[in-house]
Amino acid sequence: MKVRALPHVAVALALLAPACSTSPSKSATVAPTTTGAPTTTVAPISGTLNVFAAASLTGAFTAAKATLSATNPGLSLTYNFGGSNALVAQIQQGAPADVFASADTKNMQKLVAAGLVETPVTFAKNKLEIATAAGNPKHITGLADLAKPGITVVLEAVGVPAGDYTRQVLAARGITVTPKSLETDVKSAVVKVTSGEADATVVYVTDVAAAGSTVTGVTIPDADQPIITYPMAVVKATKNHAAAQAFVDSAVSGDVQKALEAAGFLPPQ
Image (tube, rainbow, N blue to C red; front, side):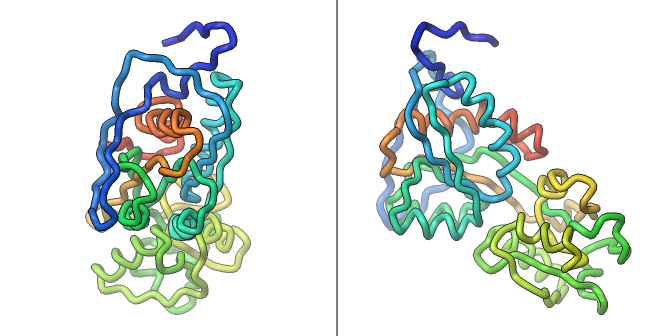
């Protein structure tokens, strides 16, 4: 649906007004919801917006930025990508974030418990996949092969969602993998494979897709897949609440969600 813009007024990121939220107590556990708050009001969005997002969201969020900037010329959107655990530490230390998008609920819960974010919403889901060197020269066919002698593997560090998900799956299968190194995020893990420093790693299916022909993906069966949920929340210290809430709404059901789906992410429901 096309919306005709009023003169000198920027169109909202997702044509959704900010949803009311309730601040949880510091000790409360708040599960992300899966629906946005619909509205019939179009609010002008402008100013600076800093979005702290998991590294696996780099491609999708970068693709969405062009559309958001075009429909909101008064908006200055900046991303800070990294491991979800590292971003949580930055926000806890007072980094100027307006929105936090995590690759897991565990890291988001740290900010909920500290009273630093509003109620999270689920905006995407994902799956794990093995990424091997292009052409899969070591003929890796599944998780068990990662434990074989002669296979050099890198994983993500403890606390990084993809690494924690992978260790959960390996433990359930009774597979012991000794990684050559533990990376700070999924993008760093992929680089180790594409540079020839490792034969394989485990990242998200979206990371394998983003790497294109530089890697070869090996599917992990659904029976072995963990539940991978991406929550997002407005940071309470934001100085631009309207833009922050609009970005969250767009990630649930707007231009950002369209970019996520195009990148291979699964919808929140």
